[in-house]
Length: 274
Image 1 (cartoon, one colour):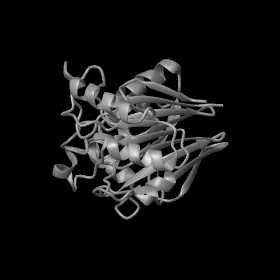
Image 2: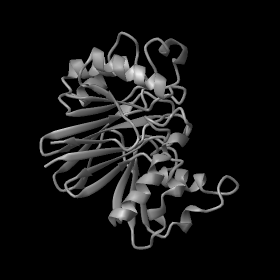
Image 3: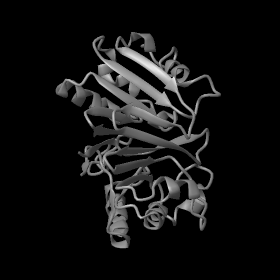
């Protein structure tokens, strides 16, 4: 038994395709987990476009999409998710931060409405269903799979996900802001003993003071949390678009030298938890 994680988009804020963003990638948040025969998709940033093409190649026509939140960089790839236009496919979209704001289907429909997009949500001919849950709920997308959820500190709210199967655990923790010198006890408990933590590492500790209130964290805080929580590995995620390949290489080297379990996620990287 294993959990296979593939990163399809690792940037935050806005996609940044350029010659300076080739090694780590320029697509915004999207990752895929293959667990017990199920395809679980987390966030629908621009990375979901390439994921969609890969699902077609693999003849996968069913998946569940979990959203941390619905800021643009986490949903603006969805209109270009080609499998959703296939009438023989089925996708279930879930979010935990919109129960008091009209629900996730309303947000997705508004994103694809005139005058901001020419193709309405109704043009997606797949069996497309939406579900709003309450943060803190446990989700059960397949036999033997438990997904735990927790709230994150981010403008308009966001949700962390912990995927558990066969004694293994992968945590997806983005977008969140920490308080310097005061570890987030909710996150510490949430990631305890995890095999892999994917954490909001948008900034460095040096950059952070100028970004307070923006809803993001640092790679150094990710390492501090993982060490205390006894997590095994840390994937730096949600990279600042201003961090080009040169900057990212330096950050990754610093992170690895600080803690051997750390590495920087990049587009199309695969990590297998066995």
